[in-house]
Image 1 (spheres, one colour):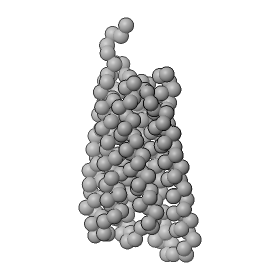
Image 2 (cartoon, one colour):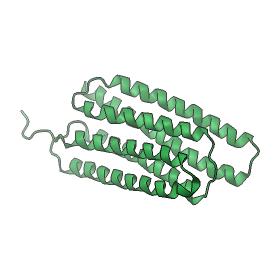
Image 3 (tube, helix red, strand yellow):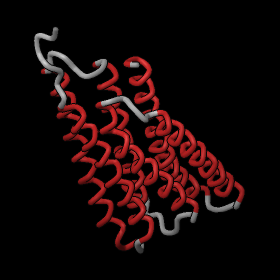
Image 4 (cartoon, helix red, strand yellow):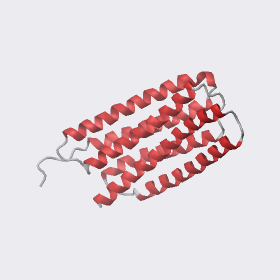
Amino acid sequence: MRLKPRDNRFYDLFTTAAGNTLDGAVLMEEFLSVPQADRERVADRIKEVEHAGDDTTHEIMQALNTSFITPFDREDIAHLAGQLDDVLDALDDAAELTVLYRVDELPEAVKKQASILKEAAALTVEVMPRLRTLKDLEEYWISINDLENQADTVYRSLLAELFNDGGDAVRIIKLKEVIDQLEAAADAFEHVADVVQTIALKES
């Protein structure tokens, strides 16, 4: 018999955190489609979403520190919050670097990176409420793994394109830093799925 009920705030907080990643991914697609002169405006909106993500992460950690009984392992809660936050950090960094480096034209495949990230974010938003029951989760982490593999393929193709076209070395370095951050966001989504899988296995 429990002395106190489990703190169920975490389910809503994780759903909010996942929603922030979707907002960021949607904005990244917009960022990549607008003229260079408009990028800073969209980058500022991505920054706002990143700040909202920080606030949600802070709420999760505060709840973690004040809850007597948590719905699953404290370490997994902290790890899940951190990986969701890493997605937004990477998206913010990609936008900020593009603006700061005054990158003019981005390879077309960068838009494919953003499209994969948006799909991963949508799946993550959909799965977070299911943590309440821990049912129907396996398809999620399988799908995220597949998307991350697609992201890896796009990333490697982009690197090959950058280094094989014989272009300006400085421009190559700038573009690589941007696509590295988008790849980091894809990796973070896979890490989110790994934590979900760990939680499901522990609690089953």
